[in-house]
Every structure is written in C-alpha cells, then in structure tokens.
Amino acid sequence: HTHGGGGAAGGGGRPSLEVWLCRLLRRPLPVALPEDVMWHILSFVPPDVAFHLSLRPLTLLVDKAGSSRGVFTTISAALRAAAHGDVILVKPGVYRESLRLDTCVSIVAHGCPTNGAGAGRAGPGTLSGGASVVITSARDHTITSAAPLARVAGVTLKQTGNCGRSCVLTTHGTLEVRSCAVSSACGLCVEVTHLATPRIVHSRIHDGAAAGLWFRAGGGGLVEGCEILGNGWSGVQISEGAHPALRCCYVHDNKSAGVISFAGGRGLVSHNDIANNGKGGVQVRSAASPTLRNNRIRDERSAGCWIYEGGLGRFFGNEIVDCCWSGFQVEEGSEPLVVANRLRGNRSAGVVVYNRGGGVYAFNDISGNGRCGVQIKSGR
Image (tube, rainbow, N blue to C red):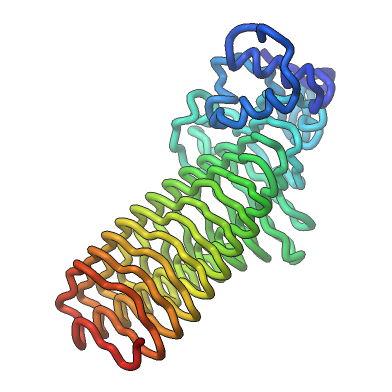
C-alpha cells in the first residue's frame, strides 16, 4: 500500500519501530519490549529481508515530474514523512539532493528488480525501459547514512562538486547499496567510519577523484560482486582497525593500488580479480595485517603484492601472475606469512626480499618468473 504527501509523520518513534518488528515477525509482540531490545533484534536482519515487499511495507512514491496528490516531488520530502520500515519508490529522473538517512528506510528505483526479493542484478541505475534514477549533489555528500538499517537500490549516485566530500558516507549502522553506480568528481566514492558495517553489493564504484572505498576508524561490512575501477587513489583502502570483507569483486585500472591496507588496517580479501592497477595489486604497510585468500592478482603495472614499512598480513592460495615487477616485494621490516600461493610469469623475481624485509614463505609454487624464483638482497 502507498501513501504520499499527506502520509504518516516522520519516523524515529517507538510506534513505527514496533509496527515494523511485528511485520517482520508476522505476529504481534507477546510483551512490550524496550526500544534497545527491538533494535538488537533488528540488527540481525539483512536489509533485503527487512524491506522485502512481501511484508507489505508502507510505500512512498517520488516522481520529479509528478503533480498527483499524495506523490512527492523530492526524495528529501519523502524521507521527512517516512517511518521505520517504509519503502521509497523513485521514478526516473535526475534528483539534485543531499540525502541524510536517520530513519530505517529503503530507497529503490521504481521498476528495479531488487525492490522485490532483493536478489536482482540489474545494471546500476538503469531500469528495464532504459530510464534511470540519478541522485546527485555538488555541495555535500550525496548520501549520509547513520540509520541502524537502510537500503539504496538500483540508482546512480554522483558527487559532482569540488567540495572534497565523498559521494556516500556511512557513519553508523548497516547501509545496503545494491545494484548502484557510485562516483565522485572530488573525493571518495564510499567512506565508511565509526564502526559502520555497510553492504555494498553488485555495484559499480568508479571514477572517484580519491579512493573508490575507504574503510577507517573501525569500519567494517561487506563488499561483494562489485566492479571497482578508474579511481584516482586506490580501489579499496583499509586503515585504523577497519576490518571489511571484500569478495568476488573485479578491482582494476585504479591509479594507485587495487587494495591497500595501512595504519593498522585488517580486512578479509578473498576470491577477487585484481588487475592492471598503477602501483600494484595489493599494498600492505604500517602494521596493517589483512588476510588475502584465493585472489587472482595479475597484469599489475608494478609488483603484485608490495609489503613495506612494517607491514604484516597473511596470504593463502593466491595466484599472482604476469606482473611487471615481482610477485611479492617485501622490505622495511615487513613480515608477511605467505603460504600455498602460485607466482608465475612475473617479469622480475617471484619473491624479492630486501632492506630488512622478512616473513615466512611455505609451499608456494614459484616458477617461470623473469629473473629468478626468490631473490634475497638484505633480508633479516
């Protein structure tokens, strides 16, 4: 069912939270629950389940060209009227707005396959008829999310100004970005801070003036099935205790590294295709300790993996091939654990250790590299 400009009052209150939880449980609550308990229960619910249309959420319709009574002409106006659990359906058009998500809502392009089961993988921002929903801002973040649970699906998100702001900033809670295209002309495409745990799924993160995604200050979450390309810094940056999971992504043609973990960053990077980045496939430095499993790192313009400035990290079962420098380059007190990797066809050595580099290397297949298998210049 749908409501528009004259609909329910904006959401943060207990009644809308309780109604939403009852819809999810498909039954009334047996007893009154404190608000913090209800939020704890909802924290275990994935966004595509929480906003599934089978739950018959209250739906607000946005149409930039609309003139019908009960239809919003801006997404911001619909957000002001929304309550927890509502779905905002957006008709095609260019919406020049900066959105702040404090209420748990789902913003979905009208006609996008993901507004049903949430499993669709349509082209980002483009609907079946070729029309698109574009949300763009020149003065601020295009989306700032601090809601405990929120979702954006099937839209194109752009930051077009010169203010240095990221396109998507998530500071708390779980924001799902599904089947979207995200870009920034002046900053980061996606910025994750303060223990936020977003889910970036089947999206295109591209052409950021800075990094594609930067997880920092304890941020986490999941990036899955995305293409991350053409960013001015690295494709993915992880720092300051952040620990995201990056899996099944294609990370390529970024000006710096494909993935960099630094300043105590962690992260689990698995089953990705990392290729043709300007300063190596993976960089690890300054006490960072990510885990990389079963990635294919190939055709890099420098080293496949560059570990320096006291970098750590664990590397298991990766294929590192056809890079312009070595497969692994380890220096400056770094000590990675490198086990059961395949290093072939790199123009320099398979592994180069120098300038006080160290580490443990076991059960690796190192063959067919340009200079030698392992070159130790001045390791520990």
